[in-house]
Amino acid sequence: MVYLRPSALVEQAHALDWPALFEERARSARDYRLQRFYRAGLPAPDTPLAQVPFVAMDFETTGLDVKKDAIVSIGLVPFSLQRIRCKEAAHWIVNPHKPMVEETVVLHHITHSEVKEAPDLLLVLDDLLAALAGRVVVVHYRRIEQVFFAAALKARLNEDIRFPVIDTMELETRFHPRRLNLWDRLRRRKPASIRLANSRERYHLPYYAPHHALTDALATAELLQAQVAHHYTPETPLSELWL
Image 1 (cartoon, rainbow, N blue to C red):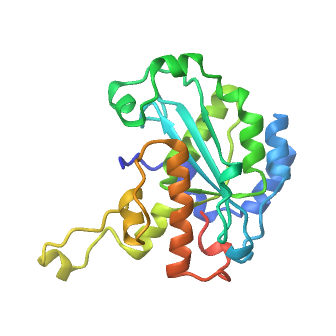
Image 2 (cartoon, rainbow, N blue to C red):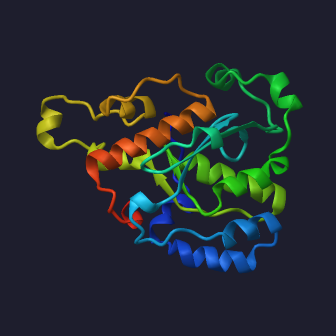
């Protein structure tokens, strides 16, 4: 996992009253698809995790610089703590209208001919937002999904999108801090890896080949289920996890 520079969009997430923001955005959004998304609302912050409808989301992109790169594929997997709804999963390849560098093609294996024939993001936006509406989005490293999605809509609609996420990578940093104490440093111990595959391995989840948006979304859904089972309870309020 390569880290992006923090953005104001992400760094302010902790301070937001998400239900209130959704109510305000439902009134102020100009695009009908965004109006419909915000009007669907969110579960209340005190909702027990066992009652929360989730959707795992993963993007593959042409690169990691939101100023010059763009989304090339999207994977969605709806789930709850009890069940993963594979039949309702979705995957789209979209035209980024940006050049794809060789390094990213090697990672996600999406070819130039595939993206050339793929639809623009706007043509799948209705279905995408319908799948997200009313659910809490779960990602592994939110600086991809939150920031790239907002930038993509800003470029097309002249308005961005805001939504809370549960970030399974951020949860792993709670359990495995990146900064070691003095004793661990003296013993030359290394911080635990919080990459998706390494995080799953700690919970004895199976290995999945990375860098396919749908597979990574499934992997993220399973990881959250495992994290909650090990570190929280079904009664834990949503507000303890979302950002």
